[in-house]
Image 1 (cartoon, rainbow over the protein chains, first blue to last red):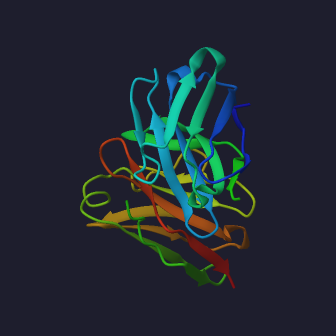
Image 2 (cartoon, chains in turn yellow, red):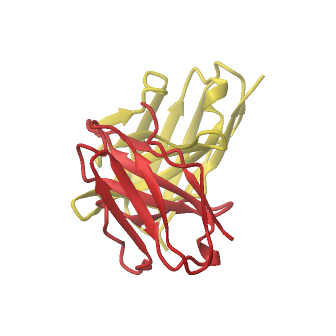
Length: 121
Length: 110
């Protein structure tokens, strides 16, 4: 079964750091671009970051640029999100997502269940 | 990076058709046909419903259809069923390998 399982969420103080992990099973992430998406009740879904197959190209939403770093370890079949200088507005459920080539482009076809990050003093 | 604009809620009776709009700009929906739609049931992760504006992943119901005109994309649900109650989100490529989601629409079956 194709599956993504996130971990590493928790409660952290403003200004703190956290590293999220996403373990893939049932497929090799080597063959796919991967994405992080977050969700809050107030703002809904927000695209956060994307990384290409070998990790040489990364992109970020303006809201996290310079604070978050996406990376991957293809040998461990694992995706990461290093989050620094955390703010209250980063509080969200963070999803790990596979970016699948479909039709003429790439689309988010497999989602994990998410891991919750709470930034509060 | 402003979100795409969707109506907060749309409702319909069983068997009816409803349409959810998703309005962007000439920098996203207006420039690319890389528009997708996701359904999110309560407590669950989103699921891909539509890709490339109007295509459906294999196995998905043909009651869901997508279209685009200018800077606005639309999702139509035909033959509305109780199981269609969920939140629906659009998504568009925005260039430079970045993406943007819509604000989300809650669909209620009356």
